[in-house]
Length: 93
Figure 1 (spheres, one colour):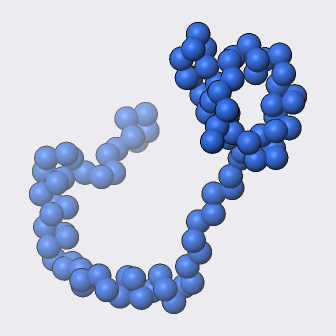
Figure 2: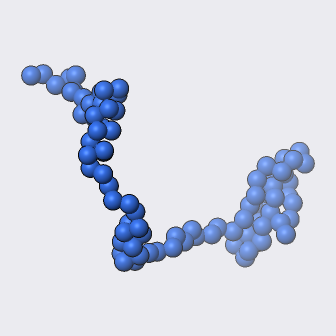
């Protein structure tokens, strides 16, 4: 459970508090009795690694792409939003 400390205590005893955080302790920092921050030990985020075979298996489960539908949708979008590669207004021809 996190120990509650005031902002002033954190300021005055920061070296000791940091040593305690490094050892695994946690603190809730307050200002005028109101909690404003949690001081917790750093945790390295570890993302699960997947093999190429696993990634390929995931993609293999996707439905096939309808190329003609994709082209039609792009043309419809271009009518509304304009082409994807507008001309450069600063380019002199």
